[in-house]
Length: 471
Image (cartoon, rainbow, N blue to C red):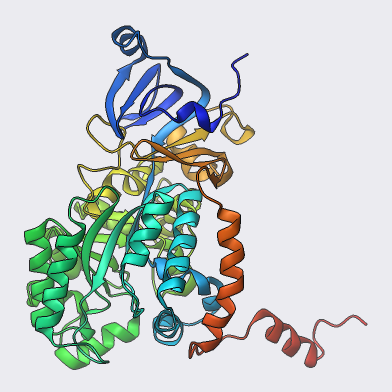
């Protein structure tokens, strides 16, 4: 019987791993070995050949385990975790009533706490990378970067460049700060700089164009929310005679460096714009079901060769449930009506949550696959469970059956970050206690406006009318 592994077994900078299966570009492969050296995949190949080439190394046998790439969350809001369930039941454009007020109440400590909590949730859910869309909190972004460094989450860190409305400085000052942001984090081990505009209508045409150009020149991504809600589409049509995506194209802000979040309300012409410009999309299926007006046509995007990854939008950091939501949303919104019983198949969603997601996030060549030269960002997933037995089509099984509690270990840059759901080198329970103590005051002082009643208010109204009482 193989002795049970412990976190100490993964402490070396060089690891020769022998999993039951490895998720590669062509699917799940058996009899493979994976060599990790100084935070990167050095070799991936036939087990016998790697063992013969490295007789000096002690291999780690991993029976019943799948070694797979960590998932990529292509759209997150790390500084919104203190108010997660405040938005349940709320109508669209909750950023105006909940998120902007909440983020405005965060000082440096609270921004760091929120980001660290969100990063922990992401890693527990199997995400090794997350694209943060930028915060409107007054505190410095170093608090978010510090949370990524402490937890081990790879973070694409957005700096917001809105220059219309509010108390923003002039465009020249924003551009200088944007350039400093791109320079400050260039080459960092875990933090990758990005520029962002919350929605196109809060930035001037010049800023949209310049921010996208700065990212193209600096090898970074430019982010914005677009075509998510009917109200925003209609405001753009009234103000400009163009839909938001058309507006971005007109000012030169679309392109391979641009990642647009949502794109749920898109016309055939706008899909062609995305395809022809090489613009990427963050497809957020859970956000659509929780507070959206529509579901992005991800299957159509795949058919047209539009680049896209999967994102949580900060809704629920559970990668396997995100895969299931992606496939289910396409089935309900499009597949049932057309008789499409596969809706892309399991492999499509795994790919767009890993390698294709990394491409959309500007991390191609950095992470997203189990391949030599890439950062060793990976998961060990327990396959020795009833849901995975017997196995006939592993990708489909991962999309429909896999669960977060099967994630045995999470690694980024070859370093073990979580073991059986909890960090190995810092006290997550202490963080949770600190968050519980601090969150109440932050929410209380934020001018949040909720439309939907809380569960307690709803229950009180329910029983006040005499419905549901059996006394």
